[in-house]
View 1 (tube, rainbow, N blue to C red):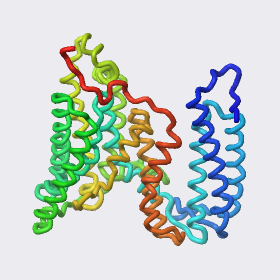
View 2: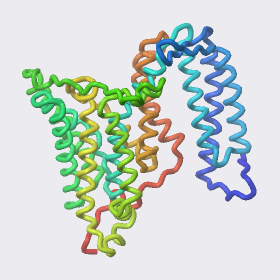
View 3: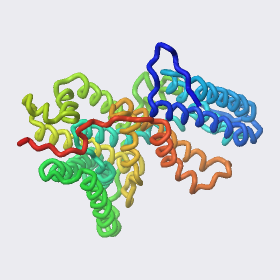
Length: 414
């Protein structure tokens, strides 16, 4: 099956043709799901935006119209293609399908759409901060598989220190724990040149084992060490009064604002400062950067420590931003989802934030579905964030190029 392109455009590579074909078949598949599953429930679904305003959508007509549109878009993609608009079409189609799915689930009832979007932003925080930690490391040439362990260690330290000395001290404790675990990664990966993937997994297992042991032997007999008062949401003056957007973005906890600031700051420093230029240089061509006077070893150490601090801060979100305590394996694989966000975002902080919001939305939908009568088994709902991770990375990302020197040891003597 050939995919036509404009005469002025360059010929598509084999990889691009495969991705274009996959996108086309995906659109057709979503259309068939809309036609045979989502169009099977009658009734209207109510989406509450504010207390006094609810939008109602007819479940069956909406799903049937979407099915026709998706199959048509899929056919166009397969036989002609959308060119540079492919990602835009895919994003709009996927977003509309999510709305149709929610309409199917809530047919005959209603739920707060604003609350779900607010929960999406909230749950994206640890993934965003974990992804930034991964980007800072990989842009420096160090693969950071240990994000999960750093998040988990930060959650434990934030809970214990926060219980003893207050939430602000808990933040500092979480950051210190993240730096400590990243220092282990830095020493083994940079100084001793051990395989970075192996070191990362070792740190993950070490952090899981240590925190589980301490939770059982220390926190269980001394529950007073594991009760912390989380930060309460703060409504930004004026901005929080904006309908819908004010609640979703500007009535949040400290962690949401910090994560957004971290994305802006990291983007600025990576692409607008000398530090960022040198960081990207040592992640691509460390030998060349070294010959130009850049201290590759010192800069890698520094960046890995900064990344650990950011990841530790992300781990503090659990005890200090939501549940107010630490539980064994509380991160539940979010560090690995953050790694997927790094790839989805193509090693850019803004792209990682977008990916984190996608994964946060899947979690928010999973929580919302558990309160609706959909007939979907709860075990399948718990799998939803990880299924989304696999689909996004394997199906929609396409070919991504990591920094060339990521995972490669640097020898200054050569």
